[in-house]
Image (cartoon, rainbow, N blue to C red):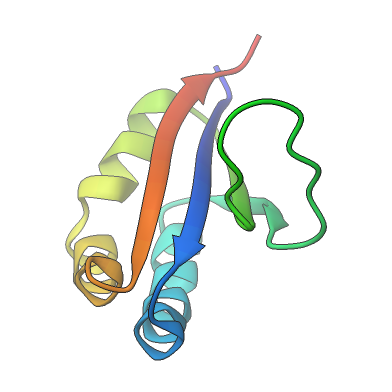
Length: 94
């Protein structure tokens, strides 16, 4: 069943986050992720505002979770750990 990796991001260090994004994109795509939204205009109707939003589609929840824990993604993750405040979840589609 399709799964979606959703991230809401407040960038605190542009350079660090740029390096993360440069590395994370290929890592996610290598593991079958397809970007559906990556930045772009967003209207927050409820809750805290996060100016950057990312939505990635995977073929399954297991595939998305495996990507997150992969060596390639975790190497990219290290660049953003002090460069952004994020909310990240993976949810199965219907």
